[in-house]
Amino acid sequence: MTFRSITHIRERHYLYEKESYRDATSRSRKQRVVRYLGPCDKKGNLLAEPRPRVDHVQSAFPMGRLALFTAIAQELRIVERAEELGLDGLVVRHLLCLALNQMIERLARRRLASWVRASPLPVWLSIPSDTLTPTTYDGVLSAVCHHDRISRHMDNRGPVLQDAWNRAWRGSSREPAAAYYDITKQRYYGTHCSLAQMGHDSERGLSTVVGFGLVVSREHHHPLFCRPLPGGRNDVITVRETVKELEAMDFRGLTMIMDRGMVSEENVNDVVGAGYHQVGIVRAIDREKPKGAWEYLARWPGKELARSRWLVKRPTGEGLYARAFTAPLYARPLRLAVVEAPDWRAEEKSARDLLLWELEGGSVPDERRPYLRQLLKPVVRKARGRWGFEVDRKAVGEEEARDGRFLMFSTDLSLDAPEMFRMYFERDVVEKCFQTAKGELDLGPIRVRREDRLEAYATVVYLALLLWTWGERRLAEALPRMPQKFRKKYPSLTLWEALRLLDGISWVRFTSGKRIRDWTTQLNGDQETLYRALGVTRLLPVT
Image (cartoon, rainbow, N blue to C red; front, side, top):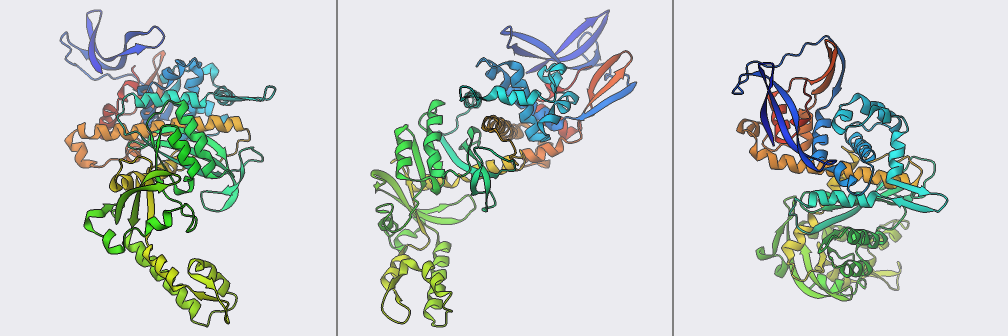
């Protein structure tokens, strides 16, 4: 919270904007100048705007986005919380610079020191210029995670740092205890890395990839945990490790929502054994596995399920029908829901009927017939005759009874179908977080060879995602309190649009007489409104 203060110097009066803050070193409350407002009278009435004399402009650095995310980092006390763990404060400040670079410039580490030196970051974060060398940021990554080749021990402080920063946002949040977990595979462009293995990349092709597992909160999509994974590892195997990491971070009573590819009896047992709940879609491998799922899908005929009382709505606006019941599955009682999408039902029946029509038409080329039989395997059986098979009409009827349907489950027996459905399909936020990581935050291309560097890089990505999602949250909370004129102009302002509004603001360094001074270019009305609402004005230079 800022306040105005009058300073008296030789019978003259000067007006400053100041703020009170807690000094981490002395652990006491202090005051600092936010900006100089100009000369004033005894009562604090401003007499004139400050007009510094400009002799020569030395440099101009674009700072619109950088100032916003630096202010967010200070609000979350990123550096102070890491220092409380015993980590060197200067290392944490440089780690923050790595995250800010990931969000804004995406420069190579060898070029990062010169970028930081030219920016206002040394002033804002109290970084000595003699610590900025081409090898500084390699040393910072090693301080976060280091693999000792002699003892073969991995000293990884990344999870501890992520846990400390989790507490920064959890302390002021009342989010529901739900988390979304997913994995993305990024193509590897280096020569060798123990985590780089053959797997499916983000474009669904086969290539050498490195995996990244991400857990985010349900409401504001803040990251809970980010870590690298072997590219060829099956997604199902990663669940147990992730649950253990969340337990170590003291997350209690979570409901975990995962993709159907991560659902198995072993994973359900691991999640429940940790005191968590799981919501997901049953991955039906065939009619026998998991036991009971095939019968549950036909529990109600189409007319009994497709009623208005069972209607639920997807975030995309699509209407589906969902009805819940409790029954055993995966060797334990679960809350299940049969979900039917009318459009999918019609499409699946039409597609199957076309294939049957083609197969039974008699004019199918011999080389295509095995392909059709494979597609229609559930409804085709062996038989004597010219082609050696026949269509099982009973099986066709069973398939039709289940067209457009899938089965959802929850280990929390108190959940009903609409809440179960809503929780699962909100998991699209994980995909959006990965899109942010691969887009605005530029996750990849991955070139580092050492596993410990990838572990440290995952912490940098975590910090960048935290600053981004906290910025989205702060903007959404501040928008209703902004002037009405601004709200009419930007009724649904996103963080990305806000960042574009801040383009053009520069930190200018110039000589004025015998002094070197810092200043910023003139803010327009929208820029000043955003800076004030998000608490960035305290970073503006004072001459």
